[in-house]
Image 1 (cartoon, rainbow, N blue to C red):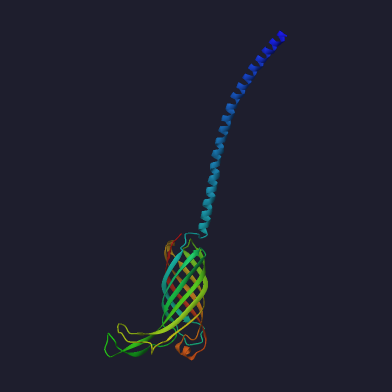
Image 2 (spheres, helix red, strand yellow):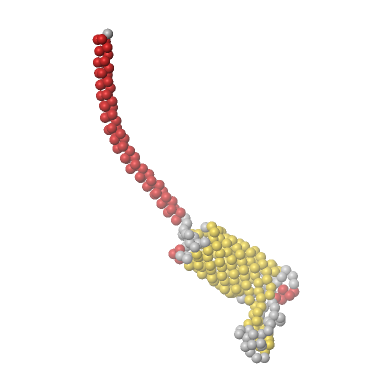
Length: 271
């Protein structure tokens, strides 16, 4: 029994020594494996760089593609100053061609949509010749004063348009429609002379309204804030007579007009 016990103790000691050596060898073998894995991970990080670079190149190509399609900074507001000529096309009364100055202002909330206000100070388009009237002076003269009676037209239009921007906003083509108000009135040109009343006897004032459609082309050299343009506007006006004689006779009249002109345009808030 003692020999068996001694043999078991010796065997257990030998097994313990063998297991310790096996553990030492296993630990020493794990170290280079970890370093090898670390070395293998480095190229993976390096190889990830070209992937991100490829995405960046894709973004750059997309930007270039958008640029070629005409996308660029756009304005959110504009102001135009120019001149117009109004021509009666189809009319039921005696009307003539006249010209004058114009202005426009508006907003462009979306890249392909704008809305604005158009105004024109026109000459005498209703064919009424200038006349004269004599007034009693109150200051600036003595006795009586003879003043020239002139007719003046005016136009106000509100419209919304679809905008087609080209060449990175250097060229803009817009078209749309809205509502127009057209009128004409008379006034006495008294200059610096003061008279008690000019109306009566001169009180000519008549107006009408109707739908309008417009097409406009603008060009901004270098894509800057200042450019120039050309526009054509049609109007179908319903009134009680835009000619003073027709207005005095009564009735309802339908007149068509064509307004054309050019302008200098200034745009703001490029973004």
